[in-house]
Length: 519
Image (cartoon, rainbow, N blue to C red; front, side, top):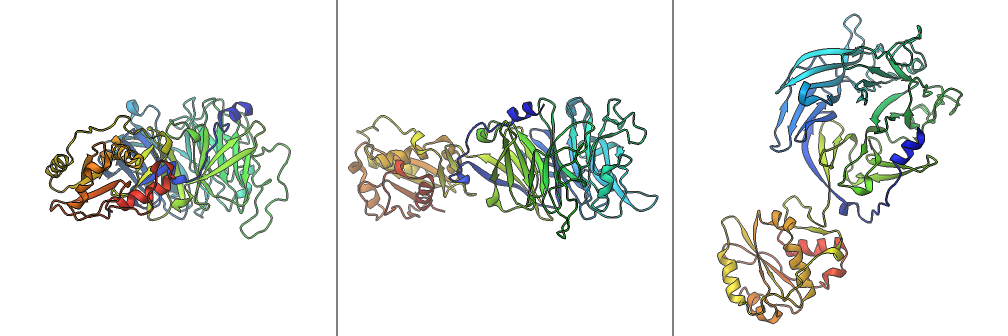
């Protein structure tokens, strides 16, 4: 069983991070989310997002519109408690059903516990709301609920329930839901093949036990279940979950109490499972995916774990001996990451933590990519050697003045003229022309510019064009002029230390081009 898992997440290729920004770009899709926690797609274009304060939102990617979904049951928001996980039924197109976890007050004594409900999503409203699970883990505190939901391949639900912080010893006993993974059917009934169903001392819905605060749950294609959980001060864990197994908390742990006190002197004990990876110090893991997309080949078939304290996403791979390698991603964004999700298109979505939470989309940088918000001021050239520039000379009989007149006449209201001057024989000019003729670049630039080229074969045939605008032309240097409706040049057209573009590092090209084009 372990061997299958190993081969699924073996490191398939090296990831050269000479500059993370050259491998992906980030875009904030939503800002100002109030304690966001969970997210899931109801379609490729629509995403449900929970806010711990008790709000459920629906984002339309095409329109950018965000709507509040009505009809939630009463949510108890306190500390770590509130509206948590959201999971869309695998058969949502047919049954329109969603499942969500939340903190609920017990009316009989004022304590609170973890609950899971199902509901039908009808437009912007929940209908047929039904509580399908209420944890026997009553507490007066507001900590360690677990609250993750996973659809297993057999159609059942796996639910994580934390140890409640003050009730950690209960994680070793089977008469309660503290520190457990719970398996139920979608209607709340209990599968008859659960591991403790014939044990009169145990709750029938318990699947595994000895957990602290499970925050990551996934199932691989071969059926194996992977879980991660918060440790105390150190001792965060990744576990391979098996039915009926004891994962040790708090009898064994690699962490200490927050005060520094020893929780247990043992890290191993007979009858208790070992993690396949643990962290000391803690990273505070939150969400987890097994990345299967094609947008980031170097991350494919890896675990990707978001973290709060460490402010990163860990890409985890294992060798055949279960030795792990870890790459740290997105640290430059400097956010506490609450959750991670793979978009159906292969991009990655990140939720940041707190009262001003964000939804961030991570996309791959193509060979040519505009990365600034205005889409004008900078480019990244990921692989300079792969750039295709025109192979044949331009029309040597072309008239530069006629081309200039045509360029000026092409101006449209609210647009400027982006005029490229260069000779066919000049390698720098040809690399620049190839970059700016790229369909990806033009698609963004054309929102604000009319792009025209004056390339007439011999460089000296258009040397007089800059002089028309009071500019002395430098030999051997490509020139970009930004011209407004009044035929005034708006930018500084020369870069003193420009040499051959093809020898430049990508970050150098970005700097040069950002000076050429008006920002």
